[in-house]
Image 1 (cartoon, rainbow, N blue to C red):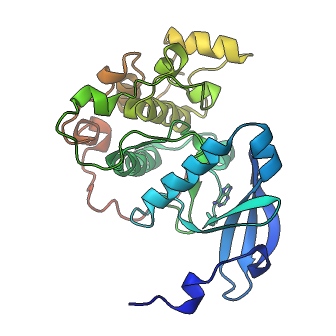
Image 2 (image 1 turned 90 degrees about the horizontal axis):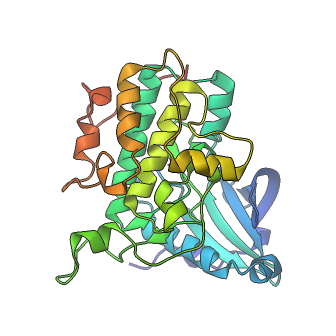
Length: 305
Ligand code: ADE
């Protein structure tokens, strides 16, 4: 069947009215934009070509597009890439507009989440990671700024500029061993954000699906306490703390959430809860924090408090 003309027509910046800045990264600016034909709102990520070339970030930009295309629209927990286009100076990624902004903003607003909200959003993150990893993608920069909320307060994970594609599809090749698919052996330069970076990315800079499980542990810690687990006055001191697993739980930190975080913040990637699950992430789903939760239908999100 031929798609409607409107769906195949090449877009350009003149198809949108650009509004406020939603976010700014080192190589891009995200704008709220309205499609002049449909009035539908999008978030458009704009990247300056000279800047990308000068900073040698072409590979990252191409990777982000590739990952977003791999993700498509089949999982509700990721921003969707609708179209890309370019003009002489810029590249444009037309993305889902997450109306309710960043998880970080909600943590700042509420200080911390109660245990019901923690359970719910931790579960959405687990489902999102199950899907992402089943597609052979490691995010590598999961943090509360990259977890957005849609109009119904479901999560939308964004920013795949640091992501890595570990394997092209979910089928394992005959000559591929378990550790080949779990760990990426190639050395890479540092990616990610200091406070959420996993120890293996600091030592041998190899990343794996388990690097996202470490970040999950950091995020759960932060939504429960309002604080990041590894804090310090400089990146160097934060890295030292991460490598020494030097963190403490504030008084009153929920006991069950603490048990889960402790099982995710483990130095050896393969020892993190879920890392060696035959069916990811059964052992996380079975954790006490999630008792009574219907994983096939989490239901509507609780009001954040
Ligand atoms: N900030 C960065 N990306 C965004 C998006 N897709 N929606 C809303 N705010 C954003």
